[in-house]
Each structure stands twice: as C-alpha cells, then as structure tokens.
Amino acid sequence: MPALTRGPVVVGIDGSPRSLDAVEVAAAEAALRGRPLRIVHALVWPTIHVTLPPGVTQAPDSAFLAQAETYLDEAVQAAAKTAPEVTVTSEIVTGAPVPVLLGETPRADLLVLGDRGLGQFTGLLLGSVAVQTATHGRCPVLVVRGERRPSGPVVVGVDGSQVSAKAIDFAAEEAARRGAALVAVHAWRTPPVTMPGDMTPLVYDPELLAAVEERVLVESIAGVRERYPELPVRHEMVQGAAGRVLTDRSRDAQLMVVGDRGHGGFAGLLLGSVSQHLIYHGACPVAVVRGDRESD
Image (cartoon, rainbow, N blue to C red; front, top):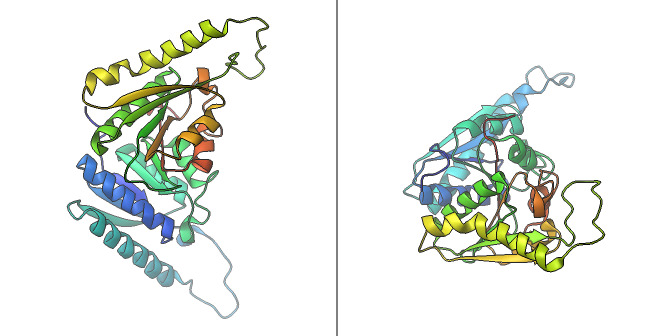
C-alpha cells in the first residue's frame, strides 16, 4: 500500500539527548520507508530583537550559528550510524520551532520530534512544539517519548470515524514494515456519552450496546485484513476512558497510533484530549495522524 505522502522523513533537533533519540527513530523510519531523511534545526536568535549590554556592539550570531552547526553534525552522525543506507540532508532554518517545523510538513512523509528538549527547542514539550505540530501539521507526527522497544505490537485507537480509518491505515502500514502485529483497540463506556453536556440515558441494554460497539471495531479493521492478509491483526474491546486505556496499552507497544480527533468511544478526540494525553503520558513513541490534510 502506498505511503500517505512521498516526501522525506523530517526530524526537528536541538542538540538534546531526546532530540538525538528522535534522529535515530527518524533514520530508522526513513530506512523502512525508503525515503531520505531531512534534519532541521530552528535558529531563533536572528528573529529576536534584544537590547545589547553597554559596550557590546555586535550580537553573537556567529556563536549561535556555530552551536547550531555542531547540533547538526551530531545529528547527521547519529543518523548515519543508525541507517547508513539513508540519504541525509540537514539545514539550519531561521525562525521559531513551530512555524519552521509546520513549514516542513506539507512536503514531508513524516515529522519526528522528541517530547522535550533544550536550546532553540526550549521546552519541546507537550502543550508546545509537539502538540502544536501534531494539531496543525500536514503530515503524521511521531513524538518520541517513553521507551523505545524493538519488539511489541503497533497499537491503534479505533472509534469508527474517518480520522480513525486513516490512523488504522497508517498503523497497518507501520506494522507491516516493522514485521509487528497490529492491535486495534476500541475503548467505550456504558452508557455512551458522545458530546459534552449530553444526557445520560436512564435505560439501555448493555449487551446490545456492546454488540454495536464491537461491530464498529470489526468493520473498521475489515479492510486491513484484506489488504494485509499476512499481517497478524487482533482487536480488543475495553470499557473505560480512551486516554487511560490506550496509555495502558502503550506499556507493551513499540508504537501507539491515534487520529487527531474522532467520535464515539473517543469522544472529542482533539489535541488536548486523547491525543494530547498520549503525548504526555504514553509509554512508547506516539504517532498522531491528521484527519484532513487540506484544512486549517
């Protein structure tokens, strides 16, 4: 099955240990996808207007630039060590991290980030660069957090929405590339509440509700079994809050995949809810798949 796009794998770096972890993950992804790797460092200094101390007549641009070049050199070496067969390019781009990285996403196959950092990516965190790029980027965003495991399944959150279907396609392709099993997890509650402020039904049939929820899950992954007949696929129905359920499943996974928003068992799956919960608390790398790449 073709990749969602055919651009490079892009990784944002800042020289921190976690960003070098992201480089290694990105290099491995580029090798699996047969794509080049592009390493980007956002250089904020030239965009910041500051008053220099008395006696100082020139801003230390050269020092910041030299440090940025050192970061890139370290990243290129880490990528070459991880995947020597991958073509690697690197660039220092003037600007703040979020707009710089968002500018990369329309042409990228995948954007990879660490969940925290330093330097020009100060606070590469949750609620900041990682969440904003996952919310507004034009390609899937892989946040390197938790434990990197060479084995374990690829786990995908399923709710029957169109966004969820794209997440399933992405997860199946990842599982096939990695030689891993695919586990589709559908979290649901009894009784269901689909929107904030909805009235909880006083009377409902638990068995009927369970059957409806299971049908959503089975129908969602039916196409995967047809497209990947040799891919081990299993599904799980779990009662509970989606964020907690998927966080639990991430403890044994090598990759967690979710859509950026959804409905049903993942009511209000927006960055700031289930996706953001996983970026904060997931125990393995988390991929967030955009629903509509042409919007925003």
